[in-house]
Every structure is written in C-alpha cells, then in structure tokens.
Amino acid sequence: MATKQKIRAVFADPQVDGMEALYQCIGELLKDGAEFDKAYSLVIAAGDTPANTWIRFCVQCATRFDDPPEESEFLAVLEEFCRQYAEA
Image (cartoon, rainbow, N blue to C red; front, side):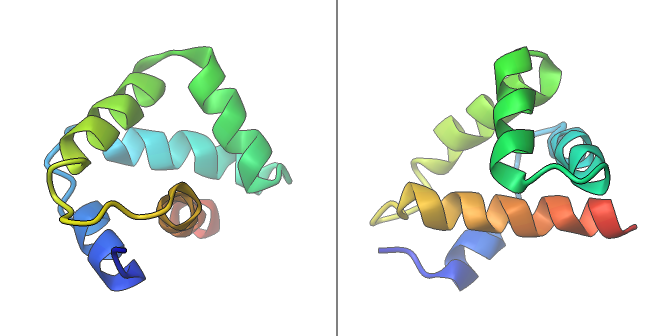
C-alpha cells in the first residue's frame, strides 16, 4: 500500500491542470463550516470542471502507484490540500 508520503508526492506533482480549482471549491465549503465528506460530495455531485478534474486526476494517478492506496488514505490527502485553501 502507498504511504501518505507517496500520496502527497502525487498531489504535489498532479500532472493535471485544474487541481487548484478543485482544492479551492472544496476549501470554500470548508471555510463555510462544511465537513470534508459533505464538501467533497457536493463538489463531485455538481459534475462541473472541478469534478471532472478530480476524475482525470484519479485515472492518471492509477499508473503512478505500484500498490494503489486505500480510498480513505487518498481522500485524507485531498482533504489536507483543500484545508490549505480553506485556511488561506
């Protein structure tokens, strides 16, 4: 299984345009008091550019791990990156 350090490295070098917009969308909801799971669900359900960016990122990331991370670990790192935008 991929370590959090390896997952963070993938997020730090996403190779997909638009990740900042995804972080910002979720981060704005976090600023407004939403829990991460709810904010994530709302952004993905909207199906707009941030949701499509996330899908492209996940597909692209599939080849970057020898042993794919657990979904919960992957989403935990997404939350870390989104919280950086919420705190800015």
